[in-house]
Image (cartoon, rainbow, N blue to C red; front, side):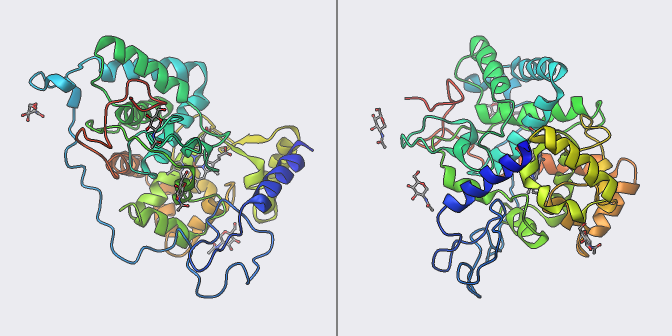
Length: 361
Ligand code: HEM
Ligand SMILES: *[C@@H]1O[C@H](CO)[C@@H](O)[C@H](O)[C@H]1NC(C)=O
Ligand SMILES: *[C@@H]1O[C@H](CO)[C@@H](O)[C@H](O)[C@H]1NC(C)=O
Ligand SMILES: *[C@@H]1O[C@H](CO)[C@@H](O)[C@H](O)[C@H]1NC(C)=O
Ligand SMILES: *[C@@H]1O[C@H](CO)[C@@H](O)[C@H](O)[C@H]1NC(C)=O
């Protein structure tokens, strides 16, 4: 019952959105699942807004970032040797109390980096433009992000130790690294650089650059390519769906495509709750189980299931079968994700925020 209601609410929200296609640019982006693909809404030849970028997007270089960035004594404006330790302690405490927060922190990093680069724009409720429809209001984030209070707590402790030196963007990146280490029982050790500055703008409408649960393989690949990441990295990073939770409205339309016993369990759980665990066996362990689940048709979203496509099934099988392979790839892919669209010097669009949810005055 709760599920049906949730599905209805989501549907109504979709119908209240402006038409999915406007002129020849805006089309279905993977978060809105249209009940009928009306050809008038998406005329042939119209391009998806999150469509395949024409020009080759360069790989993020990470130029300006460094390991141990806050440990450099000769750089006074960024010296804060306790910073990474404070993040680690804050994350450890929060994840011990509630492992789902660790999942939230890993996803927060993804949602930050894919929109305006890794600049903590995802955290803002008060921006330079004074707009209230920030990224947090965007469909992928609203009523969904977790772990924001962990970032705020780490930031407060760091500001007390060395004010004005450590960016919120770096705290988000370090927190994702630490959550990955803890939830994988130390099997995943990401080398995460520092040196990102915080942005001053955040717009809800830009969250359409994030792929959605109804996205197909081509859209997933092009969304990642648009950020300079490869299809292989897309497959690798999707493995994060081995932890955390998901709302039933995002997958209840595809029970019939799933393993029947798995679907039956989900259906029952969705009758009692709006959320389920993404991984049905080890929901709080960051492991490679996701890939076997794809093969066994025990994943939730269309965007998970389509990784069985001819182009990506090879990586899925390798990740499922070769011990340690996915873990190493995940470490590198997270490091690369942390290089997307970074700002590495102070400027009119880049600062070290005092508080993570609002820009400095
Ligand atoms: C490939 C395209 C992706 C799509 C379409 C996608 C979509 C989603 C959706 C719909 C949810 C459920 C949200 C909710 O019901 O509130 C979710 C949860 C989650 N996603 Fe993704 N995601 C993708 C990639 C990623 C990546 C790259 C990461 C991180 C590396 C990630 C990490 C997570 C985590 C950890 C959760 C659980 C969050 C929690 O429990 O709070 N996802 N994702
Ligand atoms: C430390 O900071 C100084 C001054 O900004 C810089 O010249 C030097 O390259 C930095 N060292 C490292 C290892 O990053
Ligand atoms: C935003 O609000 C502040 C303070 O009220 C004001 O100084 C600033 O000019 C406003 N900025 C814009 C772009 O409207
Ligand atoms: C996104 O929203 C902002 C205001 O919140 C607006 O100024 C901008 O034009 C919008 N962009 C698009 C592409 O709709
Ligand atoms: C991939 O999975 C979907 C849904 O589980 C299924 O309909 C489709 O036949 C599978 N495709 C391949 C190539 O295995």
